[in-house]
Length: 345
Ligand SMILES: [Zn+2]
Ligand SMILES: [Zn+2]
Picture: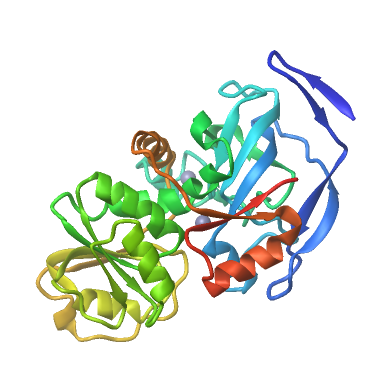
């Protein structure tokens, strides 16, 4: 073991770590012992405390997202402790609690970065997809893309904020201040944080779930939804705006049907099944249909501040790292309220 002495603590870095590794699509992750990686000049080494399991990870495993690095350590909702620094890192120090989100790196010089749309960066690297992520005991992250994590969230409860929370926050910003009645289609990890931000901003939430999913409808009501029902039902009144978190294209025409004139429907997922064709009248009268992609660091900083102020509380179901496959299946079956999080023993 190599000792790293810092002002705050002495960190012991073992030579190897446990990780759950994806070798190919549609196969379970494999528990593997790997060398602890060494940071590049602008990276930090992080000892992971917890990592959220996101629906995106299922899309990666199922081969629906086509270009993962392989072999791959998935996981992009990481809470951890900075252990050591590359030689050019100035914004972090050993002992800092950080969160690592999906956007692992953006170039800073492509046309999108130059117009402050780094979420659309042409040269972006994504944590747990194009670079290794959090289903492991240690990981590397680019220092400029880590968020400082307030003490309240320096534990498993903070992990879901880093994707589920952030994507919801970015989607919330697209709905327009005038929206009062907001529909949510799919009430999982993202929705259970979104609703807290929305209620804090004095909105009314209408939760649409899979037909007959009383379990989730009850959860939505408990979280403060004024109405919860099946996604094939008509809500009691038209929605001012909506977010679709479920990766189901059939929900798009339905959400437009439920939407008032001038309203916006935001698709919040990275992947969705095909959207069936629909009559133009569903879009007519200035209804807007759009997606939300990735995040910017500005979103992250703003959201973490607001989350602490509200304060957002996450519901988590904890699995040990080595049970990552079981955790993913639990998420797939929707047998949980809130978020699934892996913790490192
Ligand atoms: Zn760029
Ligand atoms: Zn995610």
